[in-house]
Amino acid sequence: MKILVTGATGFIGQNLIKHLLNQDHSLVLLVRHNSDISILDNRASLFYYSDEINNLITLFQKELFDGVIHLASLFLATHQSHNIPNLIHSNIQLGTELLEACKLSKTSWFLNTGTFWQHYENEVYNPVNLYAATKQAFEDIAKYYTETSDLIFTTLNLNDTFGPNDTRNKVFNLWYQLTQTGATLQMSPGEQIIDICYIEDVINAYEILINHLKMNPNDVKNKKFAIHSNERMSLKKLSKVFENTIGIPLNIEWGKRSYREREVMIPWKDTQPLPGWKPKYSLIEAIQKTIGTMK
Amino acid sequence: MKILVTGATGFIGQNLIKHLLNQDHSLVLLVRHNSDISILDNRASLFYYSDEINNLITLFQKELFDGVIHLASLFLATHQSHNIPNLIHSNIQLGTELLEACKLSKTSWFLNTGTFWQHYENEVYNPVNLYAATKQAFEDIAKYYTETSDLIFTTLNLNDTFGPNDTRNKVFNLWYQLTQTGATLQMSPGEQIIDICYIEDVINAYEILINHLKMNPNDVKNKKFAIHSNERMSLKKLSKVFENTIGIPLNIEWGKRSYREREVMIPWKDTQPLPGWKPKYSLIEAIQKTIGTMK
Image (cartoon, rainbow over all chains, first blue to last red):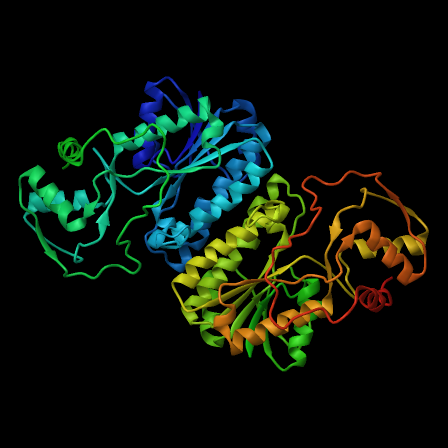
């Protein structure tokens, strides 16, 4: 298939692109002028985003993509006032422009990426932060396009992810540093439940969903599916699993920091599983595969 | 009360501002550099919107408004691709910046304006057009602010409105032109139900809701109220009422044009009435009061 992918330089993007190229899909990556394209697989073509929507429409009309995989987003756990224009541009306007281009060029499907954080306290909609609110707002925009065209729109809802070569400032990287330096880390009381997925399982979910989009689009149209772990546990317990897997004790002072405002104590549960998907790797296996790449 | 008002130069804005000033409220009107401020009541102060959100926040922290009445929007019955940035800026980003300023300055309430067009075919949410989708998207953003502050957010949902000195290109103005020129107008079959409200009744609804926001905010918090006519009728029948009131026959060729795509045949019905509000004027009275100003 010929697919346009956004968010190519992110952790999930890099892994997904490699996987899709290995399957001989033809990819065009939508990148920004300031994107670090040196990390991108050179088997994919690049298209530079500009403020002129006609450039995007022309691309779509020329390439006649089968679908769009929309991973790009501006993630901010907490925002500052001056971030608002960028949050709205990245998380609402860019996607709207893509949907407009899809409608005009009769693209078959659009695979969107959502977040568990749209569902604080397990509500149908309650955003943890402004980032999650902009994600929800984009889904409202998408409804206009699905109502006025044949576009198949589907959202894959992700929570935490991890895997080899993950450079994001996430908990496993922080903990790995402790084992190397012997430093002490102050953390919250650690009772929040963590739902973290291994990258190969996440990529597998995208692959399965893309196949549904091609083979049985009506089964997935306008639906949201969640990718989550079979092994949810508290942050404190997760640290023990990590410690046991790596074989080096972690110096964590639990309770020395407060929970953040609107800390998610229990991740979204009321999810629709993606048909045909389940994690292939246990948490311990996945941590083992990840540790080898840490530095 | 001290109130910030957006959309001051629009038809509802101009009428509402005059009314609120007559009641001795203190108003600051948020205007754009290209707004026609010559039409604004000079008893109100003006503040020019800029792309720098800190200017807005500084204004809010200095003025300590009781509330915001948000009327500004970019209305487009059908959009062109190049309208997307302006639609998103006017209907989502501006409101988000206002909510951010409200949160930071502990403003008590925010009165938003919605549209029946968020409810195509009487659905909880189904946007008639991209304009309506951006209105819905903004309400998602607002949920973040109401969840993370004490801000009271309320939406007044409007449909068609009319009244004296309405310069918008709406049906009564079109029909009045027919009576003056004797021209013929081609219209759709005219079976769509029209729900149109007289401006004094609309302004009265705002006044009642503002009083609720001050006196019993918890009764209206996070609610949507609809302002609609007690005299819904088909467009064709409405033309007869207009014709009889003005006493001059209209030359309309019904059915010579198609309904527009996603024509609203039956306006939103599943509405929550605003407590204490009902129209004061019959449709005939309201048309009589309007005709005298037409030219």
